[in-house]
Image 1 (cartoon, one colour):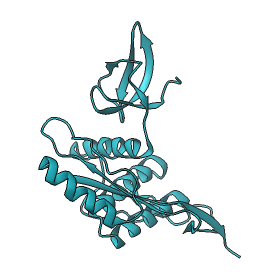
Image 2 (cartoon, rainbow, N blue to C red; image 1 turned 180 degrees about the vertical axis):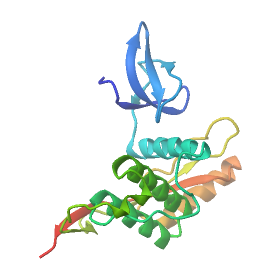
Image 3 (tube, one colour; image 1 turned 60 degrees about the vertical axis):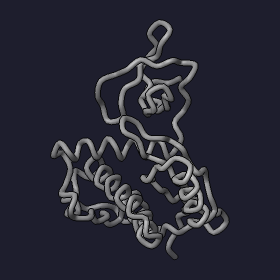
Length: 201
């Protein structure tokens, strides 16, 4: 496994960055930096897209609590001409349309992180970027997916998931059943689709 690979450690219910192997264990580092920990190489696996996104959002939120991010009360604006900014902005708009406040917050956090790393912060709107003549549109040939994760728990998230669903209704039905069985009340919901870039004519 290459150093820097993001993996999921079920023993700690955490996503970490693979660092190296030491004897019978491997060393993992928290996403965003922090104290490394040992993991069983037989149990870790590559992190899924949702797990990587969730870990990235958690790391940015941790930095936000330390006062290292922009004003969280003001939604960030995409930098004109930046495809990554536009893609995250479209994701935020779709989450708003689906009334998914959690996904809106995630998109804002990732947009701030991208702007800080690639544009030097949200004030970088004054910088000049080469115009990219593309529009980002949803790929009509691929169905979107909805999913929910149970994040109830005192010390660690429950971790139960609905799996990919074709409609918000299926996710909500799974949430009702899971709450009835476990009395858990808090969920993180996500929406995923495929996007294509179309050149302007």
